[in-house]
Length: 273
Ligand code: COA
Ligand code: AMP
Image 1 (cartoon, rainbow, N blue to C red):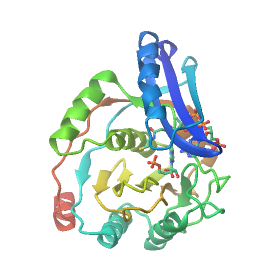
Image 2: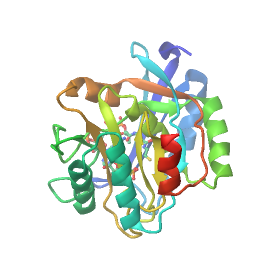
Image 3: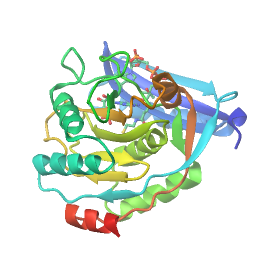
Image 4: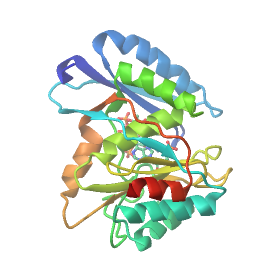
């Protein structure tokens, strides 16, 4: 379907100045009412009732639309957070993120990467080699937006993920976000763990690595989370990257290859083959 007949629907809810939840879809005109109705319980359904919910319905007419295949997904078996972060750092190293940058990114996410000491409202952009932070606003960061699954791909993906025990809505949404980000101009890799205290899983992702999931990248009860987009700053136009991430639309039209859970040794053995 052409961008002219598609709409970006974005929901965000807040209580006071605190963000409570957000979600977004890309759909054709005839699906708008149903999709908006589906987002309302999402906005109201969290433990903390929002006092404001904003739903934006915006035509994609005149915008570019990328069609992408989902990143291949694999889960790495880890026993605890230390092992998870250690393995995540090794895998980031394999695509050119220096140990210094990976450790600095993790330390900043752990303590709250915004200058206020809170989690940021979006992602850091970090030089993969030096660890220098490049986003214009360190409290806000950069938010990937205007992406979704096509209807066929999301049904197939949800089934495939359920077969390997991944039924949380966050997995399917994070996989779409990571797929869009991985195809950004100049992106080397992404690192993420959630700010939801009940959700301990996280991932590293890139076009080459796929989406490598870790059941533990932070401890239960920890509300500090965030995302880091690693780039080669000498080679990229940062404003073009931010425009791609925030404004250009992406539809994920092919489901991922889903691999069973493996150990780090199996992961590197399979990668070498
Ligand atoms: N954390 C904190 N504040 C947030 C926020 C977040 N994650 N997302 C939005 N806000 C608040 C901020 O105050 C923001 O102002 P800012 O730009 O100065 O930070 C304000 O809402 C407007 O945000 P904006 O992104 O312009 O709103 P939008 O209605 O166009 O889109 C979202 C809102 C939440 C749908 C979009 O930003 C987003 O994150 N989309 C991806 C959702 C998703 O699938 N995530 C997967 C997670 S697993
Ligand atoms: P979540 O996966 O929703 O728990 O978000 C984890 C962290 O990622 C948040 O604390 C933000 O720092 C960051 N973040 C949230 N939404 C986005 C987005 N759309 N793009 C980039 N980073 C985001």
